Length: 124
Image (cartoon, rainbow, N blue to C red; front, side, top):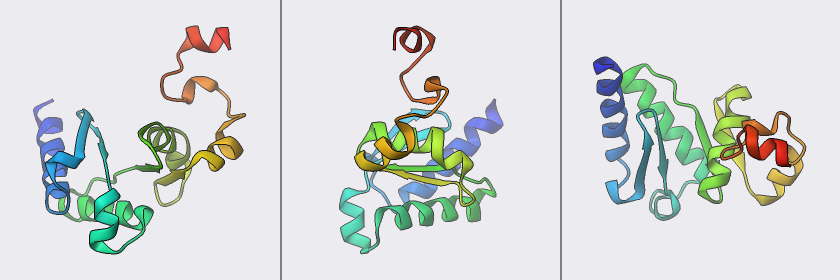
């Protein structure tokens, strides 16, 4: 676990080279949310490209492949990570509201979607 925690710190330090800690929400030891809104303007790069660049920098520093979910809000970013990025060749997923309806609306199992456990799935 100590090694896992050390790698998490290394990854976080890579983000800090480009992103303010005020714009990083640590979700768990191996996941965080980064608000890229201001950085898209600052670096003049689209959100998905910026997220990929951060993942490349993580790989350069740690040799760990980061899987990335990008969305127009935190929920969509998390679902993009959990459902679409894991199947993508570049380990990156993107969802906005329209893509969610198109790609996730009928996704099975529904428990793949963040916040939906067995109890909610049974009620739905």
